[in-house]
Length: 203
Image (cartoon, rainbow, N blue to C red; front, side):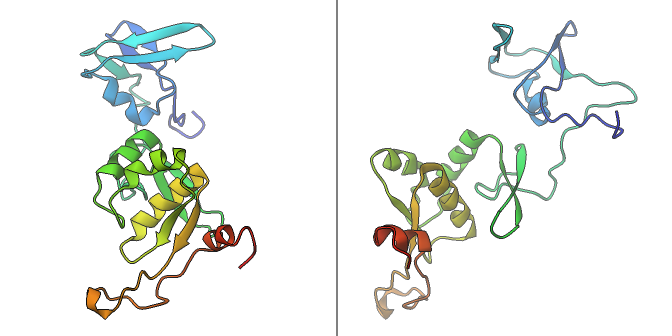
């Protein structure tokens, strides 16, 4: 109680049906309330104990709390995932090593990717098939393009990092008749893409 509150982010204990004490590791305490009267079955594996704990649907699960030490979830008010824009999930605080920028991303990466796949964003609205394409031999992704917005850039960079893909870019200029306010040289190629295309040579 050094800080006047419980600071553990995960493994926050719960009471189950007012009878059992449970450690819901590895989920963050932010998600503890989702266990209460849930529509689905939750399974938790305890490897060292060689046991599996099950929480049946429609079960009372309440996070442990005391009069002088109430249960409190992390507060992400005013923050959102930079990839999918979610504000209702547990967010990891991260830093860009190159720019020093602080940003937030969903801790639940599967949920984040699902949300991103539902978004009509990006040049071809097809972020959801990147894992499949990467498994089939995809080498790179186009980052700099007039149809890719700031949120798209974050998603593309995350996929590139995860699947070891280089990044490209270009103005995609096809003449004035296209009706797009873009000119030759407005969007440039990424250094990683240039090096990959040149066979590892520095641009």
